[in-house]
Amino acid sequence: MRFDLVTALPDLVRSPLEHSILKRAQDKGLVTVEVHDLRDYAEGRHRQIDDIPYGGMGGMVLKPEPLFACVEALQAQHGPYDEVVFLTPDGETFDQPTANAFSLCERLLLIAGHYKNVDQRVRDALVTREVSVGDYVLSGGELPALVLIDAVARLVPGVLGDAGSALSDSFQDGLLDAPSYTRPAQFRDMEVPAVLRSGDHGAVEAWREAQRLERTRARRPDLLDATPPGAGRGGAASEERR
Image 1: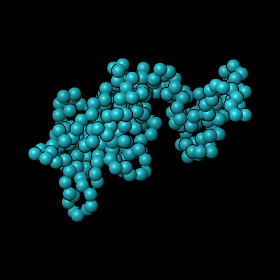
Image 2: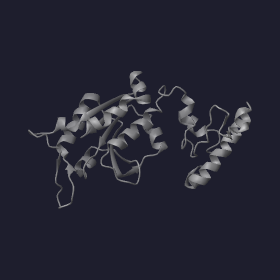
Image 3: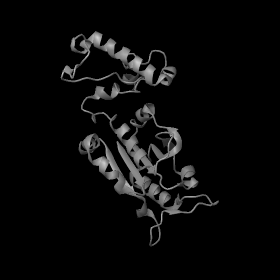
Image 4: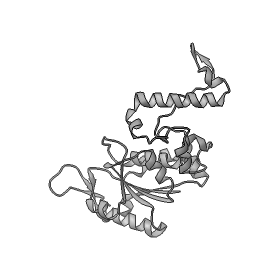
């Protein structure tokens, strides 16, 4: 799977891509992430990429010329993208089903906005999907783009050492995950639940399911309202997606 990330601040995003799961995924050739400096596509001696907005609003707006030049150059080089995604606070909320859908794509082009906004003509003519990571405003779309890349890349087959790990994550079937424990069995008078040490796989699964429902009911009851009947029963919905 290929990600192309267009940003005004390439140095801001490179370090997270060079560590942990994302680095291993790239080393294995399972995921490609290329970062493109928007200023490389800007015109003029000063390579200007932003300007004051019409209408007297505060802040600066990314100009259309460098963004059109960049996106069109990448499309000419790599062919059509499954989606051209603009990271913006007023986009659709990024969630696990969206990550699942993106993981089935071959090529995603991500535009990280910065400053006040981007010229609306970019959004109208180039962007096919607008995504927000939450109801808050950040300084730019770079961090949301990294969130999207990480959430999607880990779903690509072979990226995680244990493929079943992603299928049991919170939100995969509409519920939060159950508590996790590891050795030692007793630590500072706190014990691992006996059922997890029993070796009874059926009992463990029943315990995990009950814990998932209880945790979701306590922390995110809205998810229970949105979960279709039968979801959250052993992860069948997630298995079917793959």
